[in-house]
Structure formats: structure tokens, C-alpha cells
Amino acid sequence: MPTTMPETLADGINECHKHAKGGSILLRNFHNQGRRLMADTAKLTYQGNTYELPVIEGTFGEKAVDIGSLRKETGLITYDPGFMSTGSCKSSITFLEGEKGILLYRGIPIEQLAEKSTFIETAYLIIYGELPTTKQLEDFDYHITHHSMVHESIKSFYDGFPINSHPMAVCSAVVGSLATFYQNELNVRDAREIEIAIHRLIAKLPTIAAYSYKKSIGQALPYPDNSLGYCANFLKMMFGTPCEPYEIDPVAVKALEVLLIIHADHEQNCSTSSVRLVGSSMCNLFASVSAAIYALWGPLHGGANQAVIEMLQTIADSGGNVKTWVDKAKDHNDPFRLMGFGHRVYKNFDPRSRIIKTMAHDVFENTISGEPLLEIALALEDIALKDDYFIEKKLYPNVDFYSGLIYKALNIPVNMFPVMFAMGRLPGWIAQWKELQGDSDFRIGRPRQVYTGMQARDYIPIKDR
Image 1: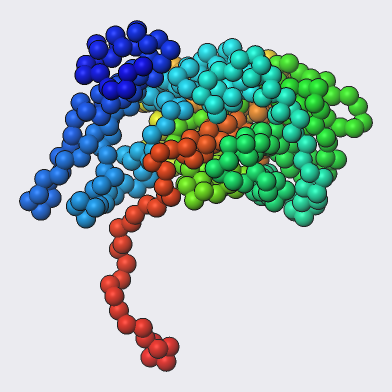
Image 2: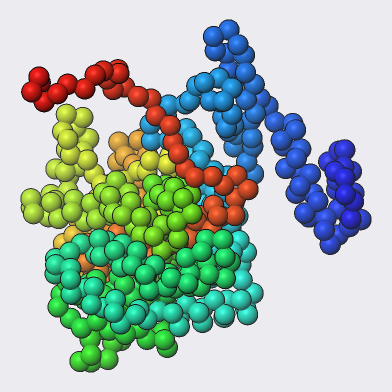
């Protein structure tokens, strides 16, 4: 295989044909180098000096101005509240194109994964970069299944929490505590220790989550059932009792499987950025994911589907007149807003909502009778898909609208909704943390600030104040 880079893309392709075994790597390296060499530069003029900033380009042509040396060369920093125009990393995990409604995990469309894959297979894809072979999937599934029990001492933690504790607080605390039970898996530069920690986290979070629910209703904490799949096992731990056999509902299992898949990763959102920021201190995976769970707990992030149910309950309590509340939402002088419509990133449609819309109606067929919130939701959906106001503003029902309704139909309590989100997002958090640790540009996160406080002043003794 040649040791020098070809001068042209055609030469690179020819070399790839000659050296088929390593050609893809050669072409990729040449392609990446070509982008660096041929990319535009951005010019910044400040105090009479002009600075050239490199522009890097992503796989689908998205471009970013590299400001890594900006402060060193100019003394300036950038100011970007919410980091809406700032790329914090280069990542090969998830691609999101909000204007076109595209979501890819490792290049594979979310629609294909939701239809053909399982959550465990999707988790493997996201974490390791490729779909697994039969043997790889069997091994991965085996380790996840056989790490699902938690240490018996962890059960005593649940006795220390108030019975009305929010499950997200409990889950984050218990996940963080895993670092005390598995102290041999904390080295972030040891591949074997990371591998075991990954298995433990994916396996144990459903158990930890189910225990938080069982404790809140005063029921016994069940052991996992290794004869069941990931989603079926979780539902049994949630709703089964020692008194009678638990019957697996295949519709519920499939619904949960798809919901976990569509939430598995979503680029550099708040909780994912939290994982990366905490992980940038070389903090272990358990603690980093614990931080992400807390970040997800916020109502602006993981609490959106809970807000949908609360909105529907408000409408129901007021008499259930959907049109009245739609008119309120259209009134710019009215603070009321319909939850679960539109999306901050997706400006056309949310591909995830299209996936679960049909599935949601399948679930509703068995639960719609006598459930006023679902009836109200269907009436809202009908208006949103036909009303010109919603169509013009692209206020379509989003993934939170449907996921909250499905969880409600599956009898999952509202305060468990963000926990379900966390279970789905776990593979993405792990993959992002893992990618960070192997990044050649790895460094501890340290955002800058623009100071707007008092200028330097002297201390005044308390008697003179």
C-alpha cells in the first residue's frame, strides 16, 4: 500500500483499486485531507488586522469556522448563549437535518432501524459504529441480560428515599452509586473496564428504574427475568407481582422497543453535552451518565412528553372542549401554548413522530375506550393536521406528543416518562462519552465568559458598610 498521499482524487481512486484491502482507508484519508486543503477560509477583521480562520466541512457538506486559535491570535472569544451556533466536537454517531426531517444513526435512517432492528442491536450500532454480526449480537445480548441484577446492597438505598421521590432523582443517584460498587471499571483509558461498565449500565438501568416505581407504590422489588428480552423484562419488573403470572403483551413490547430506538441519540443536546462535559474531566462513565440523567430531568428537555399529558389533563378538567383551547393557542395575547406540537430543530417534520404515529394508534385500539385524555389527544391531532394555522406554522404533532400518549396507554406513570427517555437515550450517552475519550482533540471542557460584574474595588470592613 502506498505511503504517500495521491495528488488528485482520481489518483486516489486508482490506488484504491490497486490496493483493495486498504483502499477504503486510503480514499477516506485522501478525501478528508482534500477537504482540509480545499475548504474555504473565513476572514475576520479586527482593529485593522485581518485573520484567516479555517473552515471545516462535515460529511453532508455542513461547514464550521474553526475558532480554536481565535483567542490566542486575536484576544477575542465568541459569545453564543445556548451554544446554538457553536460546534463543540466532531462526531460520527448521529446526523440530524432539521430542515429535511432526516435522522441517521451511524448513517442508517431511523425509519429502517425502527422497522427492522431491536433496541439492543441499535445500541450496539450506536456504541460500536457498525451493525453487529450474529455472533457479536448474541454475545452483546448475553452480557446485557446477565448483568441486569443489581447488588443486594443497592436495594437498601430505596428505603432511604422518601416514598414520593421523583424517579429521575432516584435513578441518577443510584446510577452514580454504581461507581462505588464497581471500582474496577472506572479507568477511562482501559478498554476492558469501559466495556464492562457499558454492559452494566445498559443492563441495570431498567432494573434501577423499575425499582424506583415499585418502591413508590409499596410493592416488592422484583428480580429480573433472564428468559425475557430487554423490553419485556422491564415491563414485567414494572407491572408484575409475586402473586400471579405476568402476561407479556407483544403490542406493548413492540411499542416500547420502537420508543427506545427513536430516542437512542439525538446529536449534541443538553444531556448529551452534559455527558461530554463531565466526561472531559476524565470522569468515569457511571458518574457522567448520572449527570446526564439530571440534565434530562429538566422540563425543557426530557419533560416535554410529561407536559403533553399535563396539558391534556388541564383540557379534560375544564370540560374537554378542544376547540376552546385551540383558539387560546392561536391567540397571541393568551399565554397558553399547545405542548407536543412543532420542534426546535425539525422545521419540516420530525421523522420520529411519523414512525410512532401509526404505532400509537395501534396501541390506542386496546385502550381508547373510557380514556378521556387519549380521546382529547386524537381530537387535537385531527385539528393540527387540517387547520391552516397549524399547517402554515408547521405545528405538527411531534415525538413528545405521541410518546407521552403511548406511555399513558401502557399505564406508565407520568413521573416515569423522563425515565423512559433516559433508558432510550443511554446508548447515545455511552457512545458520545466513548467517542470523546478516543478523540485526538481531547481536552477538558472549559467555556469562556464575558464578565459584566463590578470593576476592581477595595474590601470594606463590616463596621464601615
